[in-house]
Length: 494
Length: 51
Image 1 (tube, one colour):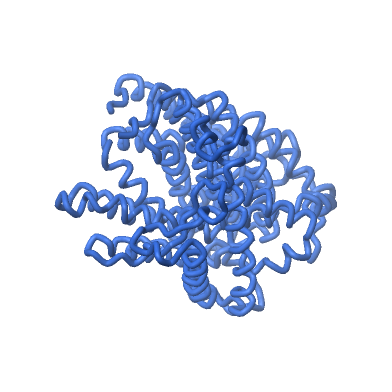
Image 2 (cartoon, chains in turn cyan, green; image 1 turned 90 degrees about the vertical axis):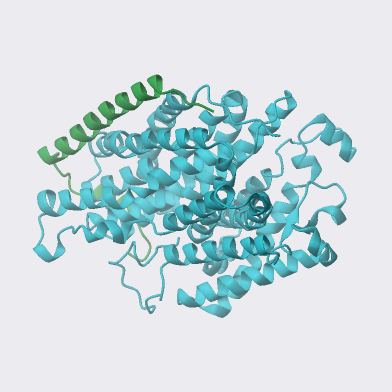
């Protein structure tokens, strides 16, 4: 489980301190990819060699390059170049994080290979093809209809199988298992993609932003209070456990649990165990909620997107769950003759999640103030300080905002010739966003060793989580999503 | 704790009494949250989404 230096200042390890935190690293890598992608606006296609995967029945046609200009590379060539490029960039990142470089390179190779293999399997026509027309095109009589985004679920399941049946192999891979880093890079890139999507319908996009404010109120003021009460009064947890648990369940799993643990001066063990629990439940939710959304909410797609953001409690699982829900709902709607523009459902999920993330630092400061002044009064030097708000602010969100504003400017504030090229160029960056999503899903599965966590005695914590999440958070999240997003539909595809 | 045994720790943890500050934290959070949510619902109703 990755814990950033910024979010765990109390941790003492023998390793030298990294030069940069995962948060800042994800910001720079994500920004770098978007900047390189924009080279195409001035006629220099720097990322067109990236591998793309199509739904396939003939394995020779599964892979290709994202840009036709690089078609000569072939699918296998594109995959190799993509792997080498990611290895180079992430190895540089590993160096900055003071990881064991050789070990990272070897384990990343295995992680990339297994994760991308899962994606390729997920794109097999018998898994991914959705409509009868698609099935006919591939000459098949049936399919699981998961869309090629079902590859995320395959990657997650592959990680789960390895974690739970080959735990020593999972442990060996650990140096490259960095789901927080990968999803933060993906979210930074996602900012640009959402901007291009939003540019075409600014009034709808700004309405969604306003409604994202409701998510903050719900997560911090309503969810947190109820879950804290349940943990303390129903289950008898002490405050050291109850506060990080409440933050993990109600705000944003890993980051919030760690920020809260730090703010109330809890032992490092506490937020780490809560984080493990959050990931396990996020895994279960991602396997269930998008399919529930497709079945019951396909006629209210924006409600579905908001629900994913409010109910799934880690950035990675929530945003990727939004992606799966979008693919499933778009496919079902298309089968009914309604073709929505892609990106809006995912955009609602990402907006809701990002809005929730923004306030982690502020909430952690509020809790830190209460704890160090009223509950466990401490010396002045150890009291909560306002500077902790910035220290705990998730920096990758700055990257998301930067790419979003840049994408919006390029799409709306430049000449028509440049604006016309922006979607294709951002599409190249988006290819990497998908790859980082795949890596995230696979890694989330890899860190979910149910048996090990059960043996460590996580049962009582899991009971609080179960009661809070399935008894309250998910359903209140659905009600709030319905109140604010019912009746709003994504624009139709042109 | 090299091999965490959370079960034992939670079983053996002393009971911490519920403090007035916790009532204030929970009460004020819920109260402000519900009021703000009601305000947003009203805004949402009177300022519908335009496409």
